[in-house]
Image 1 (tube, rainbow, N blue to C red):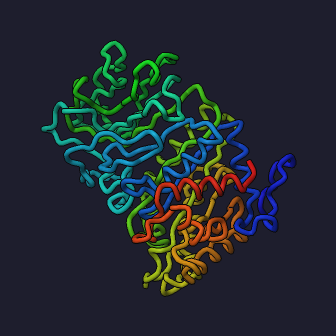
Image 2 (cartoon, rainbow, N blue to C red):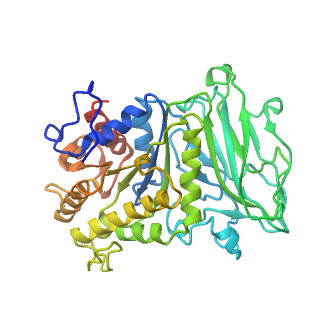
Image 3 (tube, one colour):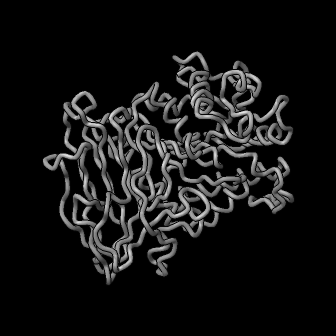
Length: 442
């Protein structure tokens, strides 16, 4: 059964909100952001991070920041080749060469067994060659713009994750600075050696202290942090840079949003296969990092909500579904539901493996946006399958976008490019996410 909403909240009854199934659990998660840190983890197709318009990742963060504090950026792979990550912050700068395989199983267990080669960044990790030294600009970094709701004047901590080595390790110098560049404001802690005699995922943190003058009114356009840069000592391989995240350590409540999976044309079966194939160590690291960022301020509890936006990529999927029902073909709504359940089971399995409390995990099943009037019958059946899954999974809600903003209304409001209904324009992403939150009466 769905968990009840706060008694002071007049919403929460599915009969009043037919677009939602078990809306109370989603309301509970939103209400928790008023008093503690909560993280969203997004999984989707090309609409999740759409080049040039940002996608659901942008839409959710825009809608959430209109009502809640942003406490952190996404957890971003250091070797990303993709821009348009985040909301008023972004990944910076691209590496010239990234490595998808280190040839060492003790390092590759922290990679993804192929997920990210066909999803989040297509080159998500960097192991610098031994010949690499220096850098023409900051690498593997995050740039936070002055109008970002995380508030660049606060106590901003950048966390750098890297894998140490038994032998042959190199050095790197993580740095932080503001733009325009001011040498007196640069933050570094010198060179870090990655050779420790063991393969271990390790975190290095650097902080910008609070500075009320660090804002656009005083000419500061952004904060930047990365694994190396032209204003630092650069990087000398071998160095396995993994992830980077920025956190406002002044904030004990609010949200962070991280995309774990996206790929153009992906369907639910593709995502299920990717999550199932991932190494336990990789998934554990991703989820434990986000958990620990919450526990730093929420010692008594963790709340993570997974959002799933998929559907169109399954229209012609002929493979066997990846869940326990093993239905063929995966284009059937029953198979779509089985693949979605397989994703839920895999994520919950990582919590069980690590003896974490299953009550920490929540799901919002959204599916794809409407693409015609009347809407595509397969999309309708897929949304119904997602709604049905809420009957079998605690802490799981679903929402039918077509009942929130039908296709013809979206076209009238300028949410679609008429020549590309497979994707929503950024105004549409923002409107849909805002409508989901507003109708939840938080």
